[in-house]
Amino acid sequence: MFFVAQQVKHDSMLWFDSASLTACRPGTYKASSMDAYCTKCPPHSFSHQEKASECSCEKGFYRADMDPRSMACTRPPSAAENPISTLNDTSVTLEWSPPRDSGGRGDVTYNVHCRKCANDGKTCSPCSNSVHFVPRQFGLSIPKVLITDLLSNTNYTFSIEAVNGVSDLSPTPKQQLLQLFFLSFTLPLSLSAVNVILKERKSKDSITLAWQGPDRPNGVIVEYEVIYYEKNQRDQNYTVLKTKAHTMTVEGLKPGTTYVFRVRARTDGGYGNYDMLAIGDPNQSTILAVSIAGGIVLLIFLVACFVVSGR
Image (cartoon, rainbow, N blue to C red; front, side):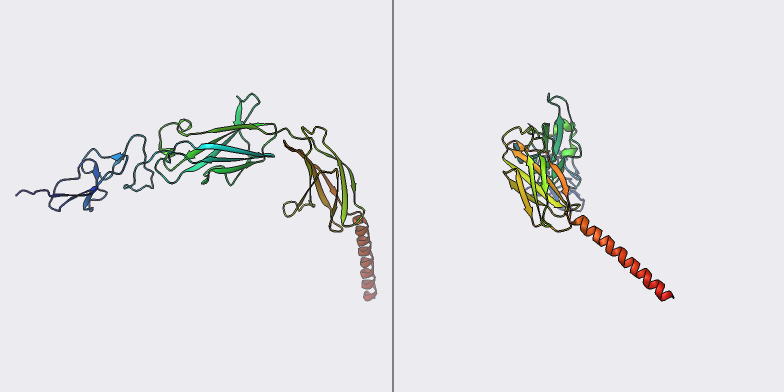
């Protein structure tokens, strides 16, 4: 008795009836022996032998562990494009366009690498942990990052790395595989600090500050910035004021409270260093002395009461 294989073609799938003893042809696969159909290999994959349970990826294409067998093989993305940098004080915002070729995947993310270089631009080393990235340095889902706490008068080089779910599967060395672009810039020279020469707190709720401009302004002074906050409360609440003058009166202060004031100058090139000072309420020492004296009187009174009651 002979069995005749009856083959019916449905788009990209080949079907054989239950009487057929013929396995799937090359170029197709059957993920399970229970499947009724032989499925055509996904894009960028192949099978050269019969009875294939999955198709192998073409050279330069890969399938991640979590990818289903029916998914096309993919490759690492091309380079990020159109870099833009925006400097602001000691921070820089980097933006770029997504890769022109995502590698056939929808899971492209970005890693930002930072290097600090010598003035000759030849000797570079990784940036220290003092440099911060917002929202993060690695695994960015959007093509934008804010980098803060950079040093003035310093060369920095940034490289943006576009990766996807199969970037780590390529046998090509990582530094050759990854497509990078570089941005190098030097932050403006720091201004020397201003010199606060007068601090006067005649009333309980106000104070007058005066200062001299920096010794090395590195340009025309645009304005001065005054920041103040209650001592040990900087992270909770602080106030920022701007002025073009060399004096400022701050009102609305709490009586009996020590405040910290920070003053710095700004030119078109950026901000200078702070001059910082702490100023307390001039009546604070008197209030403290009165409180101590009152406590002593109360203690004597309690002792006297105890002696009398004991008798």
